[in-house]
Length: 282
Image: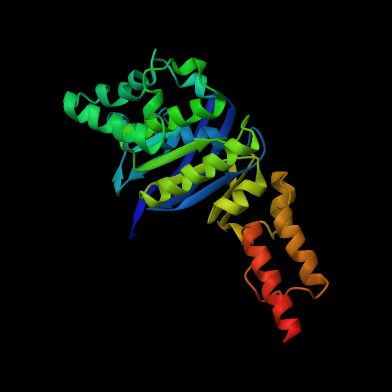
């Protein structure tokens, strides 16, 4: 049980009678993990997230946080500890200025004004938003709005942060900014859960993958291993990441050794190729 932060046991949920969206989900999240939730639309990822942070109440099953079972009376506490950054930032942003927006959550915790101000200023600084604190958030760019919605969660000082399709609608520049933000949050000690259809992003970023299909978890393990299981990819309607395809081709043609760890980024692949080339010369 060491370092276990969040657990679900036999979690089931239906939006309407007879239509079960989650079917007996069991999962364990450890402190500091970076987990990609993968699967096609309707597989149950977002519904699982909303159960894990207490927005939805499961039909059956149990949720634990830090070893304590979260009953309905504990859901407010669960929502403080497990924050969600939604896919569409406009659905999350409600205030007239960036500062007021990021203040909203801590104020609802009934914290002293000085503590609210400290949390907000720190969150704005971490998201590089200090210079925008008096601007109306609805007039910001998509990438800036995403940073505001992340600052919302940082100001709540949530230990677990869930991102629902964070790269959706972001251009490549803002995807790189998002990656840097996620790296920063990992260094801060946050536990990060992300649902995404972008398998290349997931492969590079995550350490672990949890794969959903038809309301069930069909695979759970190191992401580099999960993406090499053809039967899992087929059932979940996923494709192999491009980097993994390239690596497999290079191994097939004896350019790289399959005993080498599969690279997680283009830079790691370049380093492998450079070492292989140096070995040939020597």
